[in-house]
Amino acid sequence: MEKVTIIRSSVVPVLLDDIDTDQIIPARFLKATSREGFGENLFRDWRFNDSGESEIKFPLNDKKWSGEILLAGENFGCGSSREHAAWAIKDYGFKAVISSHFADIFKGNALNNGLLPIELSKAFIEDIKEEVLLNPETKLEINLEQQEVILRVSGEREKFVISPYNSGNSDVD
Image 1: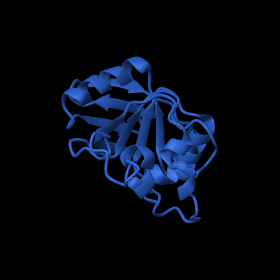
Image 2: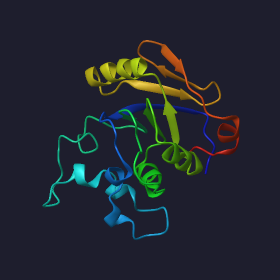
Image 3: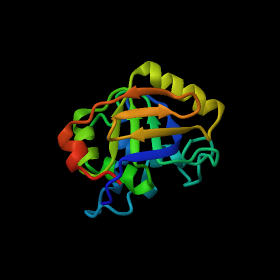
């Protein structure tokens, strides 16, 4: 994995609270043991209906949303300890997930697999959400060395904490 210190990207908002690992990657898709190919089934039951057709309004299917940063609600990655959830998010193309709280096991799995889990205050996430919903092309900058997120349109910023072990030894690409 290539080490990255700055991510500048637009945001894909999936602004639901308590998204568990079975919603991130349903258990029926956990047959493979390699990390590749899980992204195609990320949020599978929300992205597709029972007939396999795309749910156009779901953010990952809506062409107005794109980027390397997933903006989530509170308590992201709760539920089982499946590492496949981090694999699916990373394989889909996200480099970071922002939430006001992560389940501890998910947070560890994300860091161990090159996916950056960033916890920010609910107030700052609300500011990001408002800007992103007004303009889907709104960019964030995540500076891992400075451990801060910058809302580029306003310059508003907030610090986050990643332990020196994870920020120095875990490759986020």
